[in-house]
Image (cartoon, rainbow, N blue to C red; front, top):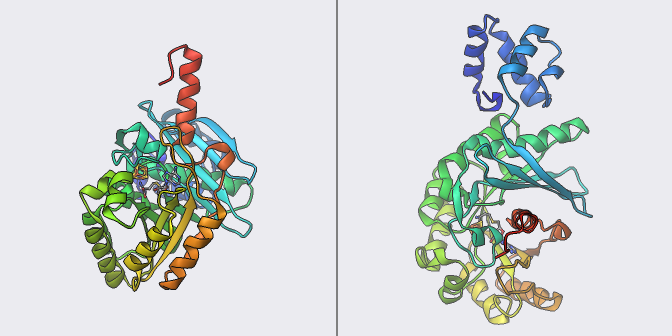
Length: 352
Ligand code: SAH
Ligand code: SF4
């Protein structure tokens, strides 16, 4: 039994079944989510016998840390093993201000097959449960708490496509808000562009931010980079985005990984400007993180600047993101690829 999977009522029922007063549930809840302790021993206002029973019969989480790397810029990248052996990644980014942002996974692998993405290159293994999604943030929240800091932001931008695992991703998101007190505006869900789910998300009445991974402004180019575009072409996608912005009154974000000579040309910039002109949005430009399965390279600084300048002509605001944790392969799916490769090498089997 994992305590993080128990809703408040269930925790109360458990205490009753164990012959404890129901208020113990409230105490435990506060240790879990307000004080964010990582052991039952720390729950010092519980009777020793209850702590012992919890230790014997319950766990504080199910994710098993396989490796952790800290980058020069302080970014922490983790690989966890799930109870069935699947591997997933989470990242914690620290900024100079108070912001502490967790980037968490929604699936083991991904079915969308974007050609430049390390996770896409592995294929799909399975959906994560909402508890598995939530717990990734919980671990960082716990550790930050220990050094007197708070987890302030969460992005669902790790491995997997959150809208392909819609219910679990949304359930986890709601728990981030209710249990970890993270404001909706400090949570971002990033999607490759699953149009029906963008529509559904617009109906949720949440202030959670939406990011759409665009990466190309023509169907021809986008088909080649993001196979999902054949199913939901640009015209439908952009229409759904307009609906989202109208319905929610919220600005949205587009992500664009700049690939040298591929989607960083002035022609693509003009097309993007035309495509997004008049839509309340913001473009995040991220120089490509090179991955073993894709030949593309990140754009150079001049191309990036030219791209930003052209978008400005169309009144489309754009910012260039700093690549965090670049020295530790903190691109989506890259740590898992590295570790699996090392394991294969040490087991003596050939590396693909
Ligand atoms: N599946 C979702 C969220 C996870 S990917 C999505 O695709 O939006 C998070 C972001 O990282 C996406 O914008 C994705 O396109 C981008 N990304 C993936 N691989 C990348 C790489 N090698 N370099 C730069 N960005 C990458
Ligand atoms: Fe999946 Fe997102 Fe990677 Fe595409 S970019 S393969 S949707 S994780």
